[in-house]
Image 1: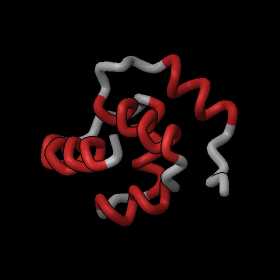
Image 2: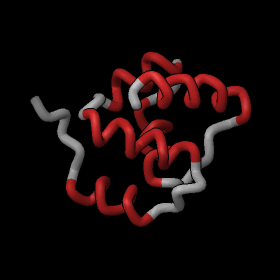
Image 3: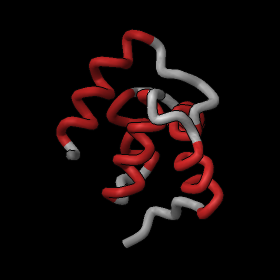
Length: 76
């Protein structure tokens, strides 16, 4: 089952800086076909926030860093 990551989102994510935690989160979710809505619910943020993290336009606030690190580690 595909969760509808657009070609454009995947392209922008691949072009964004690997240094960004949100971009790394996006790569894990795209690779494992994890829905944005699932990530948003787990981290208690909006879907738009997750998309912004995935494309690197917004960096996660410091309080989300340990949660995102844990999420990434559990899906690698």
